[in-house]
Length: 298
Image 1: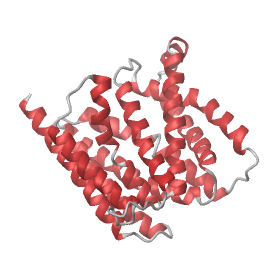
Image 2 (image 1 turned 90 degrees about the vertical axis):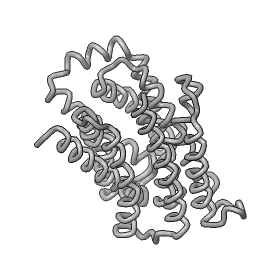
Image 3 (image 1 turned 135 degrees about the vertical axis):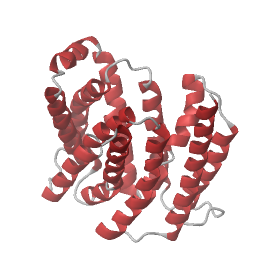
Image 4 (image 1 turned 30 degrees about the horizontal axis):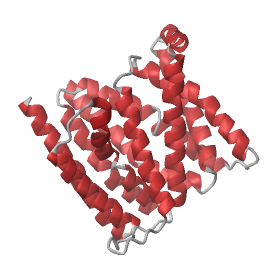
């Protein structure tokens, strides 16, 4: 199999797995609280990452970076997975999963806007046009199809979902300045975040009961939202000679996600969610086309 074929295969599997995450969130949160879900998922992901580090014989490298970059690891770990996933899961707990996942896809637009102050990049006309489409889609979803009425179904949930896009965009922008190898950095982030997650759980909800169904779905999330997909996606980007083809695969994920939610949860897909999602995808497509043209001309 040629490298490009492998890249497309790995990219598609990663996107396929990502598309199931909203369903897993919905099932898991019906059994337990957001912090319980995060605790189990982070632990499962960390065990997977440790196994991968040992398999790749990078244990000595991990120990070296753990002692020399612990402040960086603590900072990034506090941002992601601790704060980011806690905020995102709180949003999923308050909103229907179809709405939370659709709003979360606007993080790419937020990335463009935050790159202006952080990376000193210029904002393009296409970025503004893409943002108009995306955030109009968010407005349609948040108001259940009545954007002119400005009556939000759950303002707190919508705020948290949008806040998660800010945190995620900030994480990736600051991550461009991180000198640690990607696997080592991610493993250390989870290692330093786990005590923070445990402490938050202990002081807020340690009395809560655990349900087997919730634990199993949280383990699934830890492996396929936080662990294996990272390896697959990174491998796809390294193997491909056309990164835009891999990036375009991400457009499949929200469509599949809506399908899985309709099949495996009690949620009925709303027309307002579909219309809003179409607007969001249109905005992301505009942004993607603009980036492709810019790359071709540079």
